[in-house]
Every structure is written in C-alpha cells, then in structure tokens.
Image (cartoon, rainbow, N blue to C red; front, side, top):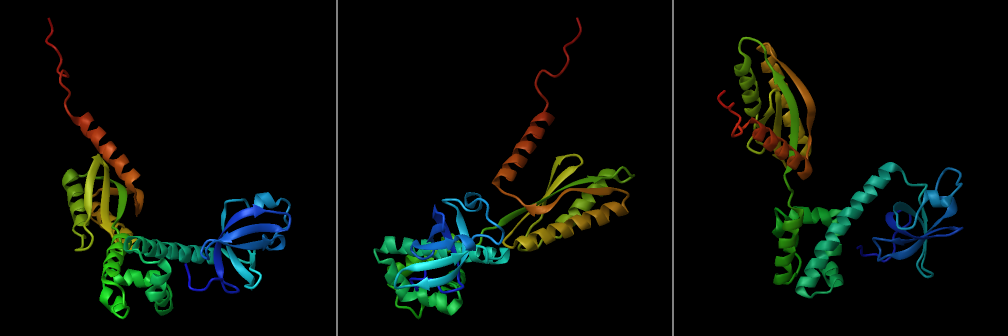
Length: 295
C-alpha cells in the first residue's frame, strides 16, 4: 500500500497472526504485501504471561509497533505491549483509509489494464507526500478534482474511471438520526398544546437538515432528521427536544425523552416501520366487528 517496501522503526502497523510458537508469534504485515514479522514473547504483554494462546491467537489482527528492521535478512521485530489504546485507534483509522485508497487504485488498474504500481508511481505516492495521506486527497477530489489531478499526466480513461470510483465510494452518505419522546398535556389546551410544541420543533429545521415528527401511539412520537454531519444532526434534534419541552411546559404539559438523539441503521428503520404498520392495522376497523342483531 505504501512506497517503501519495509516499515520504519517506531511505525505502527497492522498485522495478522499466522503462527504462535514458544519464542513468540509470527505475523504478516497487512500494509506491506504481507511480509513476515515477529512479535517476541517478551513484547506481547506488560503483564506476566501464563498462557500465550490466551493472549494472542492465529488469525487475529493486531496493532503493533516496529522495533527493528533488517532489510537484508528480511527480519522485522515487532511489539504489541508498547502500543497504547489511542495509538491502536489511530493505526486502525490509517489502515482503513489506506485500504480504501488501495481498493480504488485496484479498480482503476483492472478496468484500464494499467499496472497498479504504475498508477502509484504516476500520482499515488505523491498524493501521500503532499496531503499526508492519499485518502485525504481523494476526499478533496470529490469536490475539486482539477486542483488535485491536473498536474499529473493521467490517461483520460484512467482519470475518468478514477473520478467516478472516488465519487461513488467517498461521497459522504446522509446519516439517519432519531429521538423518541413522550409528549403529554392534560391541561385545558390538551392536544392543541402538543401540536404547538411539535410544530415549534419542526420549525427548527434548516436548509441542510429537515426535522420530521411522526406519531407512533399516543403519547409516543419519533423525531427524525438526516445529516452529513453526525454531531450536527444530534445537536439539532437535542435542541428541538428542548424546544418541545419549553413550549409544552408553558402550556401545562410534560416531555419525557424515552431515547435521546442517536444514529439509527436500516434495522432500526425496519423495526419502526413494522411497529407503525402494526399499529395502523390495529386501528383499522375490522369487518364483522359490528355486533349482530339479537334474535
């Protein structure tokens, strides 16, 4: 995935465990063509090791740090115990970005019949140097391709495939965000108060994020929005819930947040749709419900 054949000393890398022996674990470096490295037994854990098999297992992917590299003999010594949790997260993020870049480059290579190493030599390695990571450059290409790519002599077909693939894979997808709330008002204004509170919340919609509120079954409502920015979407729904509380409280009602604003997936959407469909079915009048006339 990178220009150098071997990693540098003190570099964080992702490895997959291939074999566990008495001296340590033999691993393959996923970002460097699966070349072999070794985690010595003393570098597996800061604690006393009673069972190496409980500490590391064949097939598991680990984040390790490079201690020594002997390019002539092909030896790479690695350490697992010297890696902090924060470094693990950073290394995994870097690996996922590199894997996404490599996938895009492979697709261009296979589609245009150009060796992948030629594509990296032509522009890939330079993007890593200019932007810190080629993935960051690819993200910018989504909105401003010419500013990034015009200085490279990329064949037109390869450039077109590259742009299409980047935009398909890296264009941000809207995130669905939802909050579940109970709104009640037993005062004089009753239902009108609830409507006013919910409309006030919907009125906080922006051009980028619209707020929609659906009734599940009184007094339960769901408030939803979609956003390219997770934090901004959650904040908008949180503020909208506060607006509901403000309005309904003034009118003698109450708000109970069953579940605060959070991201939801397709499974959550399906569960909500099924719930609403079942409730709608229950509310429909079933033929034959009317009682028969007494004889």
